[in-house]
Each structure stands twice: as structure tokens, then as C-alpha cells.
Image (cartoon, rainbow, N blue to C red; front, side):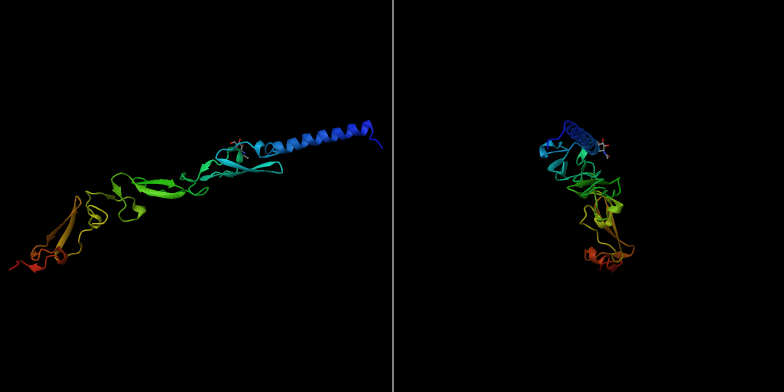
Length: 190
Ligand SMILES: *[C@@H]1O[C@H](CO)[C@@H](O)[C@H](O)[C@H]1NC(C)=O
């Protein structure tokens, strides 16, 4: 039996309303895709699929979609952002900002010393504490690997502008010219 004009008109109306409602529904998210080329290019992102009308993306290497919003794509550079280093929200701990430079290098927090400074004691909490080579630190005198002799018998050690120096305590002499055993003789060498 042929459908009547009235029935066909009703079907068309129902279809039209459905299309409008569907349009409103999908508008609240984003335009419906039919295939991948319908998907808008998103910053620092690669389109991977159009699944059930929704565009799917993945981030380019070194980038992340930290705000979970694809409209602005993968907005954080997790290779270089010190506030999202290696992953979203991962802040690099800032050590001693007066002497240390904090950077994010390929997703790893990296610390370097400001010009002329070194972290000889490998302890970033006190920053890059050594101003080489003209420092006065017995542990790192002139360089990180040149400590002065310390706690010598009857002698005093001193680092002056990066050079170790030793002096005998009063009443003692260094007869063998070897500072390692300090000032080993009393009063005179004879
Ligand atoms: C997503 O990002 C766009 C562009 O920055 C913005 O207009 C929109 O409000 C964001 N959506 C949400 C849910 O935050």
C-alpha cells in the first residue's frame, strides 16, 4: 500500500527535527566529522581518526594536551616548559635562583651554573657555590678537583685566590719539605 502524502509529510518533518536536534547536540562539542579530512588541524597535534563523528588526535612528540581541550591542541611543550617538564604539571624545583639556571631539556629538569660559577660540592641546595678559579675554599681551591691538604700536624692550610698555601705553627718547622706530614720538627732542622 502506498504511503499517503500526509504520512510522507510527517516523516519528513520528523527527520528535519531530528537533524536539527542532532546538530544542536554535536554543536556543543564540535563539528561532526565524516572522515579524517573533516577534522580541523589542531596546534602541535596529529589527527588519528574520525570515530563515530568525533575527531581524534594525538600530540606531536614533545607536546601535551594538558588542559584536555583539543581546540587549542597540544598547548604545552613538555620538552622545554619548566612548569610542565616531561609531563603536565611537573614543575622543575627551582634551586638557588641567584646562582643556578633551571631549564627543561627534552623533558628532564636540568640545572646549570651561571657564568663563572661551579657546583663543586654537587649539592644544589646551596647553589653553584664556587667562584672559580680565584676562590678561597680549601675543599675546591682553584678547581673542583684540587683540594688543599687539610688538618696537617702543626701547620695551617689556606686557599688564597685559588692557590693552596701552608704555614707552620710557631715553634715548628717543615724540614723534609713535604707538607703531607706538616711541620714535623720542633724549632730547627739540625
Ligand atoms: C577550549 O579552548 C578554546 C580555545 O582556547 C576555548 O574557547 C574553549 O572555551 C575551551 N573549552 C573548554 C571546555 O574549556
